[in-house]
Structures are given as structure tokens and as C-alpha cells.
Image (cartoon, rainbow, N blue to C red):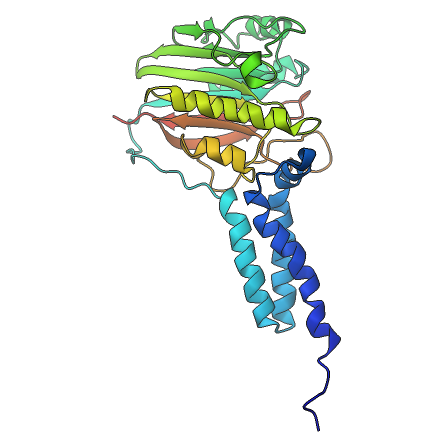
Length: 318
């Protein structure tokens, strides 16, 4: 008689890998900061998806079809927030008016000035956003000709002051004051400039969000302040560029993006940290926009910083 034969233990052991797969799947939807632990795990969640993919392969090899199907569903649920489908008015590939943006965290102005100047001259951007920058670095860039085509800028950054980001522009720019100062962002103030481009007025914000490490509430508050500011603006074209210290796996960041436009890259571009033996692991640097169509996005390595630079081209709808 076999009616009461106990089931093999190995059949129940498959529940063990399913539990972390469940966590990986729901992780990008958790808004609880857990003193910063949840945002930190969310930052690396795209890499955790590889573990879930391995579980699918192992379950399939062992013909555990139900386990494999469940993990595939969890894998899809966890991967979905990391995928960006660029939407907007389609533009012809020829004679499309463009705005180009160069965004870079110079790591306390320690980036190699010569490499940075060469990258800027090669990209020839209409807008340059430098985070963790300094006036001595700007003077070096000016001496090397990197700012020749970017004569307009936001206010200087004081050493040890309440701002560490500067926006340079090819076209006349007027800086706004007060809207996203340190009191609003819970950290450094974000410069805001209105640029009078030949393709129409553009509002540009240089972003540097507090990292979700010692105080995740400050990080969350900075993203919320930026989101509320964007919502309060009229429908003029807008560009937000800089170090968001946030990835697509963070629901707070996706809430901000929901009122703007998706990035061009289908999958996240990892921009941090650089300089080690491993490639960058997470994408915390972004160029977001409203009223534009993302055309192209690429990254550039510059010594002296642990961030990659982003060079983004945006199409201007007619």
C-alpha cells in the first residue's frame, strides 16, 4: 500500500528559494524605509533578479514546473519597475531639433579637469550640469576651453556652502531663487534656471538628492519636495539632471518620474560606483525631462570621480 507514503522532503525544500524570490519580486513596491535598509536593498534589486533567474533555470532542470512558473511570475513582477518605455510624440530621424545635456557628479570637485574638459568639448552640450563641483574646477575647465560655448550659468557654489551644483548653458539663462533651497530639499539647494533657447523656453533643475544612508527620511523628503515642485509648475518644457541617489527600483523615484518622461534606455544605465575592479552597479544619475522626446543616452568615464557622466540628447516636438 502506498496511500499514506510520506512525500519526499526535497519536494518541500523548493519552498526555501521561493521565499527570497518573493522578497525580490515585491521589493521595488515597498515604500517603508526601515531606517534606510529597504532603499539600500532596492538599489541593488536589479542584480538580485539574476538570482531569481537562476532559480527558474534550476527548477526547470529538475522539472519543477509549478515552482518555475511561480518564480517566473515573481521575476516579471520584480523586473517591471526597472524597465522604462520611452513615450511621447515620434520624431523624424532627419532634421530633428535637439537639446543635448551633459550631467556629471565631480565627486567633491576631484574629477580630472583635463578629461572632463575633453568630454565636454566632445559632447558639445547645450546644457551642462555639474554636481559636487567647485569654482576652482570651473576655472580649470574655462582655461582648457570647455566652457567657451557655455557662457551662461547659475550662481557660484561657495566652499562648504548650501549649494554644490551649477548649471551652464549655451543660451541666455535666468536663475530662479528660493523654490528648492536647503529648507525644502533637506540638504543642498537645487539651482533652477530658465533658459531662452531658440527652440523655446526651457526650465532646468540641477539635482542632488541626499543619499538614503544615515537618514532615509531626508532622502525621501528631498524626492518629495522635487516631485511637489514639478507638480506645481505649468506645462513648460523641463529638464531635471544630476545625482538623484535613487534607482528605478525605488517607488519614490518612480513617483517623481510618473509626472515627467521616461529615460531613453530600456534598462537602467549603471553609473555608480566606478574606479574599482567591478563595473558600476547601480544607476543613481539621471536626466529626466518633460516636453521632450528622449533620443539617445550614453555614459562616459572620467577619472577622479566615482560616477559616470551622462550625455543625453532630447528631441524637441514641433
